[in-house]
Image (cartoon, rainbow, N blue to C red; front, side, top):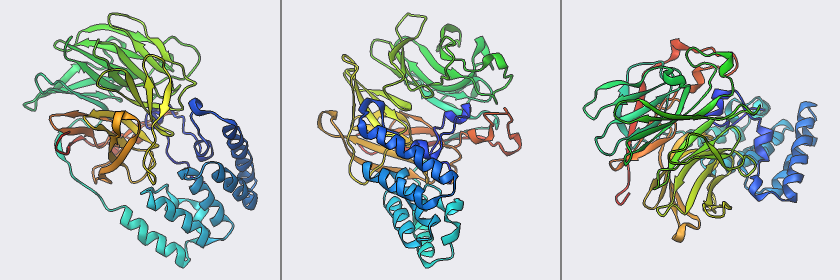
Length: 442
């Protein structure tokens, strides 16, 4: 059985969760007795699959799906079980449920389906899958960065002068592209101990650029002593001079500080996508403090504030968008329309009626417009703005600027091996940044 939907930033850390683990993930914030039942079913299903007892595996997966109806990964697992037990009609019916959600979890190359690929059922599925894979393209190329070794990720635009800043994973630096097209290093490689760049955010009021950074084994000049290090750096926006940096202490846990969000008072919040917490770097402080511990969410990714800073919206890679009350720190999962699955979100960029987000945990990868309902109580609608763009090679979190969503189409993170540190330089190509126009009013 294939693995599907690993967290993008965890590619750097070589922590690919298995399909079984992802299939039963439920946020700790909503833990219930059913979650324990799902966990036990997950363990039994894994054991049966490894023993090639496929009828038993299918039985456990069906019971799990009864507890979590509509869970795409459980639907996929049941389809695998149906195929492994020779029921092509039932397997394709489940895969069609995923197609209705506009999801392709990789059945075409999964060996679990090899026995039914000569059936009429499978031929019909392939035809419908081809329709899903048709590109939806609304963007144009904003610019390219010629250096193929960047492995670009986070991006931010200075609203005062239009300069764009892009973080590099591989070369451990931040690149600045001026409004007139000139490209230069904002900070030099590994300056002040900078590690693999993740995200960037700009405080225009105080002329500060913040960047999250962590260890990637395939970053330039990797040293074993760098393992598990992660932190936030603050640079003067004009000179690139280091103003302060805050690294997490070595506590024996894996951390990957990722998405950034600034409140109106200049306090910075950063998600930890490896340990699932949220940290705060208060204005003028030099140390990160735990704002939300790592047992509240499953896989924190994007962060975005409400207009009044009273709510911090959190994209959890495993199960969608949450609203975190800043006063009580109580999380509440936002309901979304039926027939929509919001796992795999990477980043949240605020717009007047909601968010723009890149969804990478599925195929085809896409950019979504998530509209909030009255009072921000739920997600009222979800529209696909762009999908399966021909330039995609690891699309990643972006930013809203000048009436458009600006994002890296090809982070190329898969070129780096998170275990050996090897980097497939022969396959690397220039970074492509896309400009996707927003709808009127956004």
